[in-house]
Amino acid sequence: MAVASQDRPVALVTGAARGIGQAIAQELAGNYSVAITHLETRPADSSFLAVHADFRDPEAPAMVVERTLQHFGRIDLIVNNAGAIASDGPEVFDSSALREMFDVNLFAAQGLLAAALPHLTPGAGVISISSVNASMPPAGAALFGASKAALELWTRGMAKELGPRGVRVNAVAPGAVNDPQNPRPPELVGEFEKLTALGRLPSPSDIAAAVSFLAGSGASFVTGEVLTVSGGYRL
Image (cartoon, rainbow, N blue to C red; front, side, top):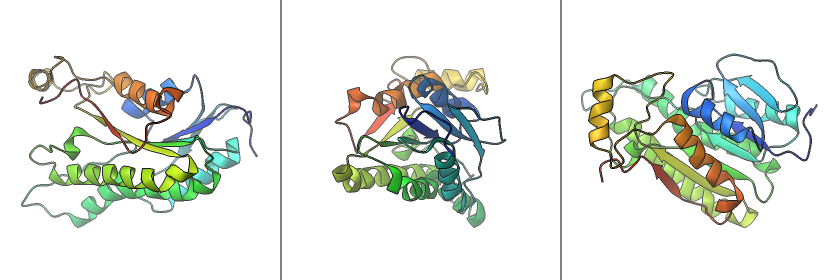
């Protein structure tokens, strides 16, 4: 049974336990009731729901959508933030870990959209978190980059298919984010900063602000786009 006001839009944000996902959920909470996927269950109220979900499980996307609809009665925005990374390289082939990475980084987005689509109305949106690695993967991250490149291609394809329904589909591609909750080693931060035009790394709040822009009325004619938020990484 829905407990939220039917007049307040609902955002579903995956992978919101910390970091970028947490910042996105906090940013959107001013204008949306927010459902998040989390590593643990938390008390719900009229404007917040936390659902325990593991997107390596192919049944998880449909379950998350069902729980969100049961609680709020609607979904207006899906933010695909949950992500996974696996070690890769020319000598590595851990098929199980690589499949799990694609399950989380790509197939979960399709599962959430398929389950939510009958309930998405004109003006709804889908925003996925990609990575600059989709276009320029470093050594040891070629397949991670491939999973994000696939997500960006999916974004463009779904934008074309859902445009006639009035549903916008976009992505945000962060550079190397420095999360205060999980800081990178100072020497690594320094190396990344040397490669960034603005001389600093983006924070989770920088990425959240980009998501908020794409979700808002100021981007109402933007679809099928990938917005890079890297401070000019490797220009």
